[in-house]
Length: 507
Image (tube, rainbow, N blue to C red; front, side, top):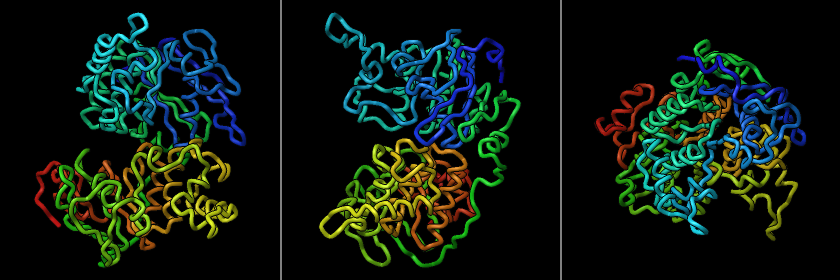
């Protein structure tokens, strides 16, 4: 990796940045700089201060103290709009698109080309098409965003940022929802942007992918600066060690749960027309069952249908020997099933509400009187119990969930379903977008749940995660299960063969 860019003058420089919130110091005297034409990665666990630093750079927050110098001028951005106008754009991990508008309207929202008082629709479509062509993605500018997949929405977000002709581009987990092919396209765009002198700040928990694009890496821990180094002079193990403040020899905890022969949950011949067909599997007490497969293979769709979020055409679902009749998520919850969505902010949390409200949301009757009034002492006590049990880092149970890190938000969703006394939990991409330390904590919780007899099904696109945490894996391809494999006796290559439709059916 060449690093000629790193020898030039700083395009953006932050010196001794400090940011305080009530009862929390989010950043303490952090310094950082970005050169023209370089990709500078910022690494750290969730809660390390990465997002706060990016919000200061992009004008969302004003620092409590410290200086920001941009293109040789000391500045304090008063708003994201001011930062954008000066050439600083951010691609958020959580998508910020308007579902009922078209792709073109989203890309140029509030910046539409006009002829007099009217929007120039022809130019709007043409300009949007040029941005999409630059990315190399095939998405029609006139398509409504609500019709797109998560990966396609991510590409629209990137196209929107590129349309600003930014000189500083902040990418927050840009590949977390992308396929391998889309990631390759993104990396090509990044190389082109570097060549044109754009400085890119890159945040990702996929440390292995950074070698292809990153020039320098800065590590933050607990809101403090740890180090900055050329990427070629360090390695992933060293970065992880600096992030967590200790050597992380194992990515996965030692398993304490042991599978038995007792089947606690089963699905038989589940079908939904045009989506999946004849899906059958069993879950045994003490085991973690994995769902693997390529994007769109039907893993999430099967889980949602079992949970009653989508209709089932045929099939039988059995829990502890009893056949379940599930017509809605309410029925599933009452039966003891829980589904932890991959989109935790849209479908798992009420992010503007505090920790305690989220924790009791699925089981309000437990903290209410027979007249339906909330008993706030029970409410607070329940929340505090699971905050302690799951080691959730929060100043108090009254803290709004949106202010917590991704790992702690994920733990709150788990706590919500544990308080509901769920008997089977579907974890859908539970570690997406969270750091290695938080991943380890989530894995440990999953193992403890399985050990305590609660059914755990892990849906994951990361094969190392499947191999490291499951006992068996059901592999999906094109809406069917092509094989159920013993995790201890399989490998990534065999799983990929089944996921591509080339494995023989094995139950």
